Length: 310
Image (cartoon, rainbow, N blue to C red; front, side):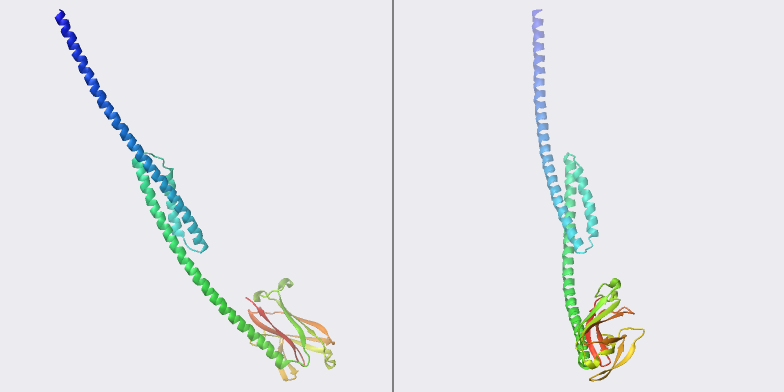
């Protein structure tokens, strides 16, 4: 009986020992597995943090590229460029960037996919910027060439204008020298008027001409009623258009001179007076140089050239 009890105790002790050993082995295995899992989790977190930092850097880099593109696009517009293609590409790229920035997933696979997309987008943006920079440089060169060409044209036009002005002055001087009367006027002034009695220098707005001058120290034989004649010609001596011109012959000291008078006025001349003629244009004058001259029956009293711009 006692032997049987001892045998049972031994068996029970063996079972307890075996269970303890099994529990110990299971505990060791579990500890190792949980330790490995923790290590793996830590490694994954390090990878996720690294990828997240890379994503942030790419986003910052893309922000800088977007700012650079905005500056280039403004420059392009100021150069009168046509950046519509690059602008459309940039708009599409910006939409992609916005979408990628909004994605906050933290898995390694998804982060890697986002980074790959961001890197691709960065390359596209760099290409767009390179194309726009090249276009801007080309536009700058073209604008510089046009500016130089315009400067040349202005210089050429200035020389032509000076030549034409000189031609009108020469005609004015020739008329004075060959047609002057024994007495002459002074302080000749030609003003070009437009509607509302405002002055203008533009041909298309010219509506009337006002010619004023002084007659001083008129010799006694020429005082009293005298007919004065207004003549207006272009720089080549051709009279301007008129529906009722008068062909007049004046008797200058150098000989008889035929003129086309646009207006005739009888004036009672005294020793000194300020006179004026107002002539309403029947047709618009072309831009150019003109000479207005005042005659009496004894020749030219005076003349003045004037210019109308476009």
